[in-house]
Length: 288
Image (cartoon, rainbow, N blue to C red; front, side, top):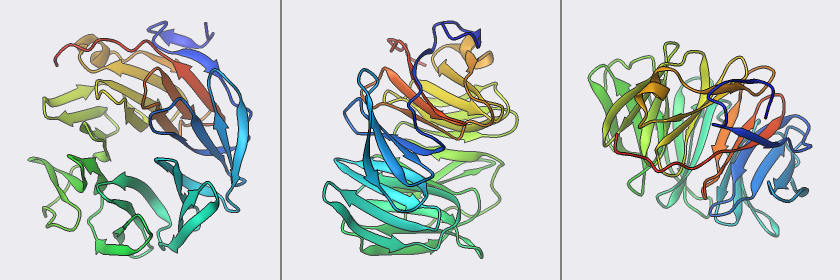
């Protein structure tokens, strides 16, 4: 048992810490139990929790975001270059000019990137071959994701969430203070006071402050969060007591900078001062 468990013992069990120095981004290969870890040096490693770690790609630049698309790898570098890698190397690369608050999502027939170009917040959409289909200005605190098989952009307004397909009109008005993460099952909003989860089943609140990053598992019923002081938590959203007092562990020294669930369940990867892989029991979730 990890000596730093705070409460909720056996919610997360440590498995391994891959020998990757200065991890910058993580992503699981779809439908597999293979984790990709990109280091600031530009090296990308493949990690199998029950196997080992091997170097698979040299990007030649520092990565900011890593996303897996089938057997390909989509990378956004710190300099704002969007690349798509296949087995034989780089399929294509495109400059985005986006250098802050960046997110990359793949699905709905495209690859969307959102971030700040120094003068405004913008979203770019590329097709699978790297041709740019859209460039648009968006308000602050707008998030992007894939829901219902389409690329969407989302804002949190005082009256509730506003969601539409990227490129369609986006609701105007002042936004709330939520920093949003859009997943296929729900939209998660983070404030200093806690975490809100909006889904078709309604809205839920998780009482956990100082959250920096969040992720939902493939079922949409498990929420992982990472705090600014290094704790990682795993919450069953159908359990009111867990939402009131989230089980968590001291996992990293310094902020948790990323979390990712394996699409086949069982594994959660986190990065902070290092990369760590955790296992957990996949529960049978009751209706919320």
